[in-house]
Length: 201
Image (cartoon, rainbow, N blue to C red):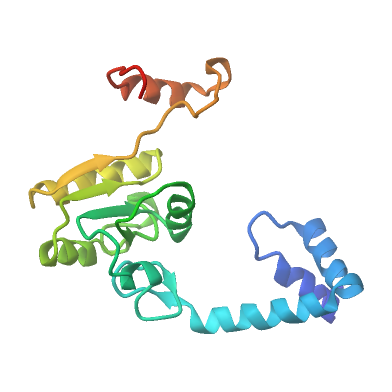
């Protein structure tokens, strides 16, 4: 199919995460055979999004404006700053919690082997923000990976020298989970991060 439009469409769809050759072929054929109008709309919206969506100048989340909706919202609590690895983490927290503070998006995590250091994560921008308008509390919401933990430690040091209280989101056994099905590293982390038991809370 190389060199023709159908082959190019299938190859283009493969840029999406988790989409292999067969899935891309199914998607392409679905659009061509059953939903051409949807395909045209998809093409238009993707084109506009690629041109117009950039980074918020304050928190680095995805937005088509200079400031994202969260940074522009005067009702958010400036005393709380949550640091996350990616825009998808902002979406997850917004959808699952009642958090009303601010965010800073790292766009990755420290990984010296991959050439990702503090500069690549915009930590100089975060430092300037902490100096300009320090929050009362910085919530570190990096993932529980080796790189995520290293990043959390670095962030803790940044906050500590500025006398900013630091908290770390809890990781461990999921609600409704059974211990026999929990992987060893998660269970070990849950034991290491155990808290005092308060009945009724």
